[in-house]
Image (cartoon, rainbow, N blue to C red; front, side, top):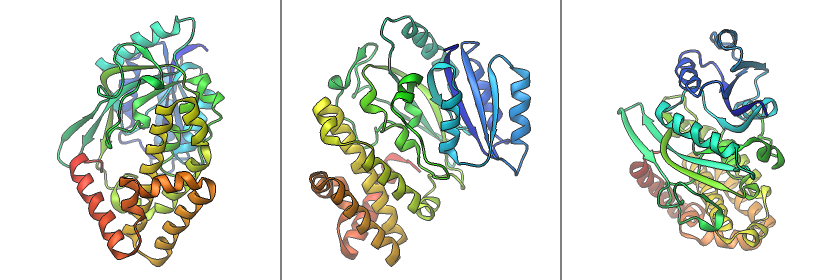
Length: 342
């Protein structure tokens, strides 16, 4: 590996806001490489911007142009070409806090000198709400030990708002490759696979209680916008099925009871989200798709099906009939107001 960290930045018609993202990443210095993946942009000058940045910083920035394959293929492309010991994805409309990044880079330099390399560094992220100009920090001080290396057996309890997101994690590049991760093309919500599938391969973790990632949220065309999510619910279901197939959670629990518990809870959340947005659509086809999703889980793992269907969160999405549908939607609305996740 020639660099300490690779920042992969998938770019799709993002000329209006990608410069700010890149400027924050450049403060990491020459230890970092920045891979700009132009995902077949045609509506603005994103391809030219990528080339201009690469020409201006030839030792740090590389531009890759691909046919449109979606966000997941941008992540895949970055991983294929990464020369950094560590790998982080930064969406082109988001950015990193430069003071926090300086601290993270110092820690990664230290980790690089260890006899056994660190597999996963976790930091906080911040929701930057465009509609009301407010911020919400998503931290993990109650879940992870601070300023020490630990394993899954040392973790605490995650609150419903605290699941790891792509924004939280910095993986060791070779560990990611060893996990065999390959995100599907032309599919949204692939970040869920990115923070789920590699976890059993992670043997060492370090948590830094710094607000590193700034997650811009509230744009009308954003993938987490509610109306957009309803329209793309089939893709949400596809991701959930891939996650069902990714691991035998019985084996994961045998490796680490706490990791198995966390991954079960994460899959429960995915089942809930899929069910809620199928309910929000409300058409006979989508309600039938909800039944099919739960039946698919039962065919793969009957015991897990029973556990998830009747635990408090997933049951809200799985309850049959009009009452169950209304209950799941109302529960979603309440959670939306509390956590401001879209």
